[in-house]
Length: 370
Image (cartoon, rainbow, N blue to C red):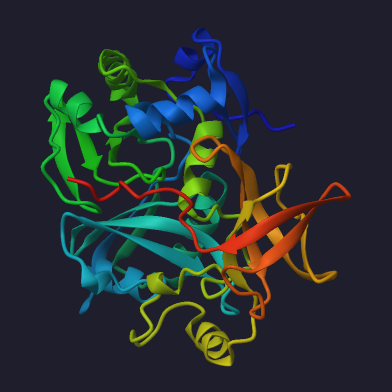
C-alpha cells in the first residue's frame, strides 16, 4: 500500500487528536475533539474556522509561445473564459474530456498574462498537469507544484479580524487575491473559499507553512473560533450546493448536468469538450442537478435512488445532515420532468424518506459580504 502524503502541519493535527483519513492520497483531518463536525461547522457559520487544505493541488502555467500567452493557452483548454478577468483575479473553471465529462474543477489565479497559478483537487492534480503539458506548445511551461505550497482556509464572519491581526490584507474583492509577505516569507492571500461564508485561502510556501498555521490558529481562537476538519468542510459546501468532484461532477456528470454551465465560456472559439457540451446543452435531455430537503426522518447519502410516483427519477450525488437547518439535505441528478417544489421519495437503505425538490443553496449566502 502506498504511504499517504502529509501536509506541513500534520504534526499539529496529530497533537490536537484529530481523526485522520485518506483524501486523494493525503492523510488529512476529518474532525477534532471538542465538538466534532457540528461544532466546527457552527463555528464557521457564526464566527470563524481554520482549515488545512494543503492536499489541494498547486500548478503553474507560464511563458509564451509566439502570440500565445499562458493565459491564452489555459483559456483554450479549460471551460471558463479567462479573458473575463485580469491580473490579481481568480476564476472557477473546469478541465473537461472531449465528451464533456469533467476531469476536475479548479480555481485559476491570473498573476500576469504569462503566469497562471492553478489549484486543482488533490487526486486530480497529476491528470490535469499531464493534460496541459501534452497540449502546451514550446515556450509554455506547466509545473506541478503540489508539495511546494501549503493552503490554509480562514472562513467565517470574523475572518477579516483574524487576518488583520496578522497584518495580512483583507481589502480585496471576492475572487481576487493579493501577493504579500508574512514574517519575511511570501504568501498569496485569496478571497476565495468553499463554505459560503466570507473568507480567505492563504497559500504560503511549504517551509513557511507551520509558523503561519500557528499564528492563524492563535488568532482564530482569539475570535472564538477553532480548527475545522474536512468533515465540516463537506457539510458547509453541501449547504451551499457547491459541487464535489467525484460526486456532483465527474467524467460522467458534465458541467451542463451539474448546473455549472455558468462556468463555461460558450462564446470562446475553443476549449476541451466544447462541441459535446454545446450539443448536450441544446438537446435539453440530460438529467440536471437539483437540491432535496428531507421532510421525513433520514439522512440521504450518495447513490441513494430518488423516486416519484413509484418510478426512479434520479440519484443522490451528495447527502448529509445540515447542522444549520437541522434536517437532511442532498444534491441529486434528476430527470428534467421533476420540477422544483415536487415531492419525491429517497430510498435510504430500503426505507422511503420523503423530500421536497428545491434549488440550492440551502442556506443564506455570505461569501460576497463586505
